[in-house]
Amino acid sequence: MSLLVIGTVAFDAIETPFGKTDKIVGGAATFASLAASYFYDKTRIVAVVGDDFPQTFINEFSKHRIDTEGLQVKAGEKSFFWSGKYHNDMNSRDTLVTELNVLADFDPIIPDSYQDCEYLMLGNLTPQVQQTVIKRLIKRPRLVVMDTMNFWMNIALDDLLDTIKMIDVLTINDEEARQLSGEYSLAKAANKILSMGPKYLIIKKGEHGALLFGEGKMFAAPALPLEEVFDPTGAGDTFAGGFIGYMAKAGAVSFDNMKNALIFGSALASFCVEKFGTEKLINLTQEEISERVAQFVSLTKFEI
Amino acid sequence: MSLLVIGTVAFDAIETPFGKTDKIVGGAATFASLAASYFYDKTRIVAVVGDDFPQTFINEFSKHRIDTEGLQVKAGEKSFFWSGKYHNDMNSRDTLVTELNVLADFDPIIPDSYQDCEYLMLGNLTPQVQQTVIKRLIKRPRLVVMDTMNFWMNIALDDLLDTIKMIDVLTINDEEARQLSGEYSLAKAANKILSMGPKYLIIKKGEHGALLFGEGKMFAAPALPLEEVFDPTGAGDTFAGGFIGYMAKAGAVSFDNMKNALIFGSALASFCVEKFGTEKLINLTQEEISERVAQFVSLTKFEI
Image (cartoon, rainbow over all chains, first blue to last red; front, side, top):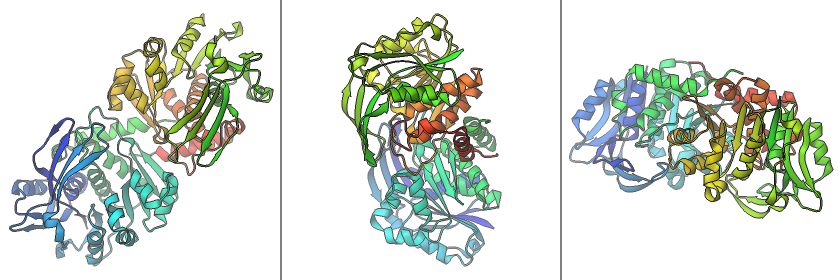
């Protein structure tokens, strides 16, 4: 039994109202696997980097007991690079640079030792690659979670619609849910998207929390009102990684476990945004996570 | 002991993507007092209308056991009239017409029989008039809740700042909290606004619920994801009225009671938006309210 995360492992250069970074390590699989590692110790990644990717960060994965056999290192090539600048409200950003590099022809090779995968996290990538991973797993995982974004809705909608038929949980943000469904009301959007294939839908609303739909039920997880959002990069991936990591730890795929997974994912994401990149995420303790989760409990608990 | 609501009792003409109304009854005090009446049967209003205001609606107040001794009817004058058109997303609207009419020189006269007021809801009005009401009450009420809006921040900031020093709970929306505090982070905004005088702050976030700050604590109430938001007019007033009505019923001014009051206020507001104007709000049953509140409980409850 194991948890497989597929996605980008890459470089980001980020500018926010609080400061600016040089190239730092980012990528959906990086954030998601680190987040998952706090709940589940059989986390593995399938991703591709160039030989410019620092060995020190591969060691960081190992320190978090994340298996990197599936991390392809392409000699003579460069890692995927994204650079972006956040606006003052931190809710919107401009992409300054996107260099696909090794990602341009990424073939997601699944090591044989990964075939015991029971929990599959498909981080944001082309739907075609996400689908290939599902097909290459001999045994269908117990839970397949997929993240995607509006970019793929714009340029690869058919592939996306094909792929979401094969998964259990789709995670997208509110604007993307509206775009994918053509419905403004999120309740209506959720019904429509659930009719497209996924059994569960998570709508990420950033500073407004997240909604879970499925089994005819709804659940709303709040976001913790933070004094400072330093860098939102990777928050969605961290949330998704924390979500599936908690589910892998919990075992049973139930709505109740998913509710808790939403809270743990939100707690991890709330740490992620407090520093640049993975800085906060690589150095968490279980005690810090428990304390943060307790804040979520206190934030939402009432007795009627 | 009684609950006094001050605010507008007026006419609205509303256009939404779902339809259009002629002049229908609206106004902050209308929505707030009707909402409060479901929890507390000593609700009273101070407001002003012209003699164009229908007696049938004054009877509606009486049916809800709302005392209208403080409702001034000005012979030969016209009631306040607002007309607005909502955009497709229902989160923004254009004001088409504002006719102050009787509101232009509204003097909020407090009948002697209202001097036992223990709960005071200051609906959205000029801060000057809101302040006059506080001053005219011989005994300071146990709980003073005040609603306001960006309009008064723009044209009467000094009066507004004076008035919020005299109250217990301020209710504003997220954009207004940012404007009033000059802080983008709602956590920071809340701290700053609480330092201006109010003991508690409620930040209304529309479809994203509401946040309560005070006593060094935070609470997040979700909004129920609705299939249809038919007409958002009056939702904030309904929320505030439900909030203070529940507090009056509960008795003790505590953070725990306020949390529940937020949920009951949100439940009432979720009904309000399902039809035009007060249509839904005038015909609720306690059973419907209990069922709706149960949906809020189920929406947010988790066991960690």
